[in-house]
Amino acid sequence: MIKYLRSTSEVFRVLFSFWSTSIASELEYQLNLVIEIISVVANLTGSIFILSLFYSPTTNLGGWSWHASLVVLGIYTILDGYTTSFLHPNLSRIVRHVQNGTLDFVLLKPINSQLWLSFRIFSPWGIPSILSGITLVIIGFINSQANFSIKSLLLSILMVLSSFIILYSLWFLIATTSIWFVRVWNANEVLRSTLVAGRYPISAYPESLRRIFTFILPIAFLTTVPAEAILNILSYRIAFLSLILAIAFLFISKRFWMFALKFYTSASS
Amino acid sequence: MKTIAVDSLSKSYLVTEKKPGIRASLKHFVARKTSFIRAVDNISFNINEGEIVGFIGSNGAGKTTTLKMLCGLIYPSYGSVSVAGYIPKLREKSFLRKITLVMGQKQQLIWDLPPMDSLRVNAAVYGLTDREFSLRIDELASMLGLNTELSRPVRKLSLGQRMKAELLASLLHRPSVLFLDEPTLGLDINAQLRVREFLSAYNQKYGATILLTSHYMGDITSLCKRVLLIDKGKLFHDGSLSALTEQLSPCRFVQIELAEPVNDISLAKYGEIVHQEGQLVKLLIPRSELTSRITSILSNYQIKDLEVKDPPIEQLIGKLLALGSFND
Image 1 (cartoon, each protein chain N blue to C red):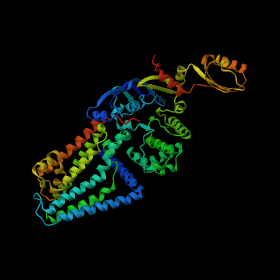
Image 2: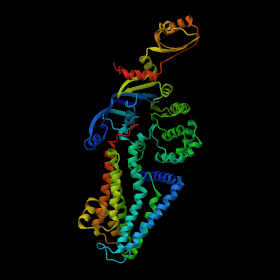
Image 3: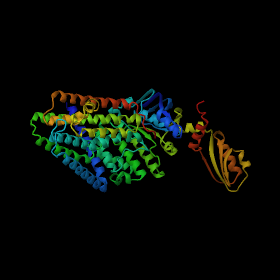
Image 4: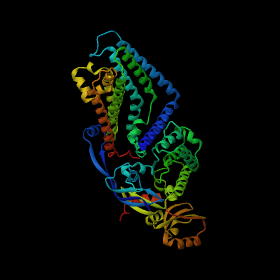
């Protein structure tokens, strides 16, 4: 137990050094910082404008009231921020590491290489999305008059975590294939645009798409399921399925990475 | 004590081939023609603790592939490797703490930040305490002659300064086995000398084992008593550098500056004339005859200057590899 705690505290120390250097890197270029801030603000304004269109009084969407689907949109925005802060900067770097052969340095460090590659960079530019996502969730939750309980809060946190893990694992699986194919940028883009489908409740889609988003691409588990947990309408069966899925995906991504490394040939010098 | 033991090590790669042109590119996209290339072919050697061994050979000879198998980055196709008692390909954490790999053409320092930030990341990864960290930085920085450079962004450092900072980052965890792949690549003479001095000092201070590849023979001659010569994946020579030169060239290189011009025929009886320009003559004289012939030259001619040395090792190795006859 003590050993476990010690290794956990070491992991936190490493993560802290990772993130403080990546923030320092961002601050190195002052003009870029200004431009980034402008782009984040512009993006947010755009999203809020689109949102205001949603507020017009119309019928509900696939059984979801407007406020309930705001929660889905909020979760989507949080995931988008998470992607900007962690998944995109880190996992697209894997491709670059493979191309340049600098993966060698990562593999020779006495640290789990998957941990390094997945969390080395923290980009602060996802934070505004995460904050506005949380705001949306709160607004949607209050206006939809759902019941609040500690139990549903815990379940919601669990479902959001499991959504983070599923999305991360999918992304990492795709990035791993760069060991063989070297350039897999496009696949990353496909994933990002598929995620956009998670903006709306899954039941808003036609039956055939709904099936694809549930069973083939687990979009339903990324946004709709956590939103249902927040709105206190999630069945335990689905919650359980989501957890199983997260654990399975994480396990597969880990095993797949180990498998891929056996084929790593390292870029020539 | 054997630190590195390599036995019948081989590595084959699957490579794709493509002819130039659009048609060939389309064909390549649909159906790739692949073939196996033997990058390393059945090599065996041992390296003892504290040795500095030079690993030489032309580009694509298989040096880097071998180094990467020794680090555990690449899985061997055949044969066994043991480094510091570990099997490298398992990449156990305790193994990784003992070794380091420095690559002259790749860098691990974060480009936009001062080296100090990258060093802090490494310290956290290797679990160094703050005290250990600052002690080691002080020590290594003074050995390398670095100080304010450590707090300047990497992109603003000269190549020499950057390489020294790279070395510092690679040695922060005080490894006992160093794999250096062209650590002096692109450096000017002063920086090269500094790096050599540093490596030699590190080796003496910590008894570290060093395997080094370089295209600068100066690195090899000044650091390595022993060299491994590899070509087309095969090991050609394992032994001292002087044995290699002797074996490669039974002659020594004599450069004479005459006081007055003479015709080359008269000097040709002393050895093979490689070059003659005005009063400057360069000769190759068999080692066994060296003393007697030089004495005779000195008594028969007015000599302004005379110098005896081994033929440049680059030339010898180039000649050898071109002939490919060393194996017999």
